[in-house]
Amino acid sequence: EEALFLTKYGSEVVIVHRRDELRASKIMQRRAVQHPKIRLLYSSAVTEVLGDGATVKSVRIKDLKTGEEHEESAGGLFFAIGHEPSTKFLDGQLELDSTGYIITTPGTTQTSVPGVFAAGDCQDKKWRQAITAAGTGCMAALEVEHYLATLSD
Image (cartoon, rainbow, N blue to C red; front, side):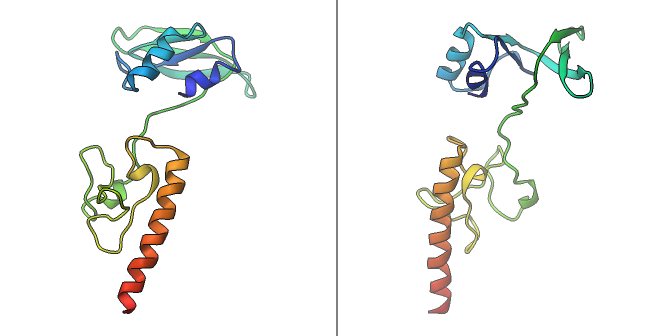
């Protein structure tokens, strides 16, 4: 998604991807691969950003299979390093799935621990969007209010 958005502002967007295949949805993969302003470099990583101290001029890219490096001219750099939820601090305290997302009761923000609610990117592995986070945040606030009311009854 980010690369498609950036095509509005640059003459070319180069996706430097660590793996030899994309993990995005099939439709997003197809859009990126078919976009005339997007070029993909698979099994690669940016190893150095080169410039004059104020402006990016180029990046050094390493082919992760061969170890060879080359320089690509660049007027900017945008990192999108995936969607790993920031839940490591919860290890063993809440039920997490195999990829680190907090498991909630379907249709709620309730976690495996009574009185603990989860909202947003840490529990939404499908959409991971700000609007979803705002919506589940509101759900969690309402559920917390209801939970606290049951404690005082």
